[in-house]
Image 1 (cartoon, rainbow, N blue to C red):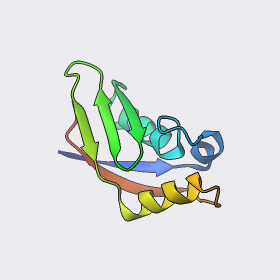
Image 2: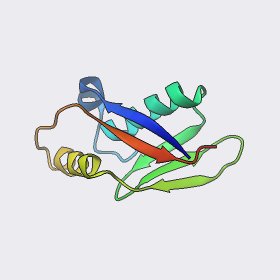
Image 3: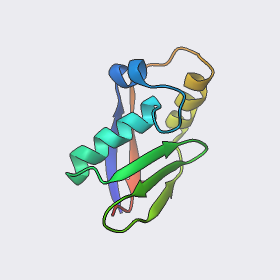
Image 4: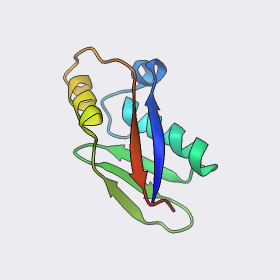
Length: 95
C-alpha cells in the first residue's frame, strides 16, 4: 500500500464538472497518480467511493473510501455550494 498526497487546487475546482470522472477530486487524483506513479495508467471515478481502474498492465480495479474532507467537498461541490482547495491522503495499493 502507498499513501499519496492529493491536492485539490483552485484550477481543479474551476475546470472540474459534476461528472464523476471530471470532478475536481478526480482531476486531483489523476495529477497525484501521475506525480507519484510516474506514468498515468489509470482512470479515476469519484462517487460514493473513489474507484481507480488501472489500465496497464494489470487491468485491476481498486475501490478506496473517502476521507471526511473529500466526502464533504464532493457533496458541497455537487450541490453548487462554495468550495475551497484542500488536501487529503489516499491509501492505494497501486498497479
